[in-house]
Length: 65
Image 1 (cartoon, rainbow, N blue to C red):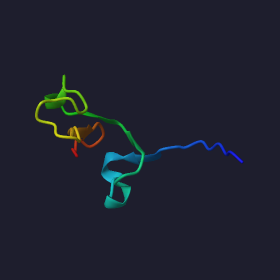
Image 2: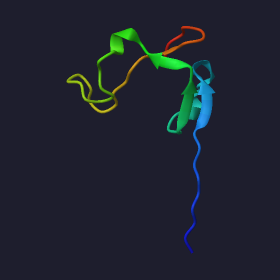
Image 3: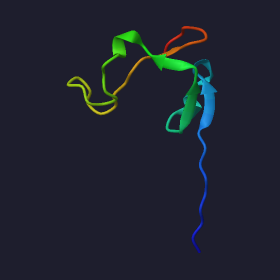
């Protein structure tokens, strides 16, 4: 028997991220890419090996991750 499920991301503020969230689908509220990241792709730069790590900045507290 087939089943259909609707998946929803865990909704977090940037300051609410913890180690337990690694590998989970999350939706971050009120964040943007750092200005130095403008124009970059998610994982297509010459210096990216596999992850496309980018700095995110909270629009509320201006902290970054």
